[in-house]
Image (cartoon, rainbow, N blue to C red; front, side, top):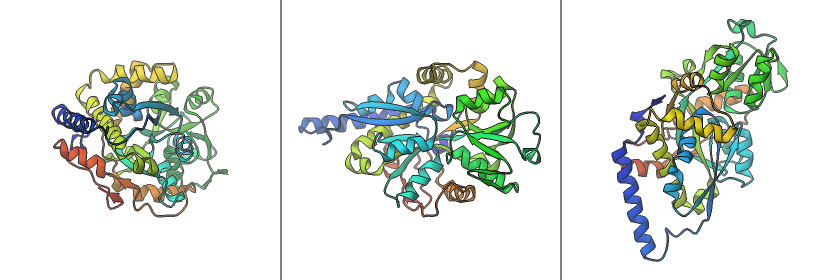
Length: 356
């Protein structure tokens, strides 16, 4: 597990100062008879039961979100992959979600920029193509059956784009390599039974296939990006919700920043807390070996790596899972950067794709 301090995992001192300032401000507002001017009863947050969503897992387990939200209740929903979370977000069933970048891009483009904004990063790294022993290089993939979590999710796009770069013909209905969108737990079972030849997955599923099913890594996605940095998980909020409840969005961000900081300051405790949260969400813990391997491959950071998103757009177009369109305005990092500045931390960039 790595924390990118230069892209703002808050120090405990800075975080404490920020939270105390927020409490003082809230007390002043309450004294004037208006609790931040917002009577919202609850905020609904989506996340996945993956190691790449550890900031969400820790924020829930340690009560960091609820501490920041105060009297606003936090309700959560667990999803398998991004497109399902986007469907819930678009329907107004949730207000915000931890999610991979490609579904965030898709909803923004399809809505003409009106659906949602990325307000923070969460995780970089932690995705790979793992395969069985019959596959030793890319040329062995022809005619094979490879799984992804869901059509159009971030790993699905990564696989289809990479296969195109390797000269394979792919489509959403066939091609030189069969791509089978499959729920992650089922992917493990089908791989163990020999019905799948591999999968492009996020952690901890990469490590589960390696440790529990004898797979090996053919492509570590980090090797495809400059310096190995690429966004795996971001925090996305419904645009109309953010407009109506900016104070609550700021509080949600406080909880998120606190979660990333907690992962930094409690590295020894983090695996057990993450595992307990995964058990609560899925009914099953990971083995120590799987969890340790998975955490080695991820970096937790509030930086969304916005400079990678133009490439992600190109990948989605190459994969045939995305419409053409602009992502100008995708990011609204102004609330995040205000909190970071108040805490004496470095701000993060929207790379010209929105407010920072």
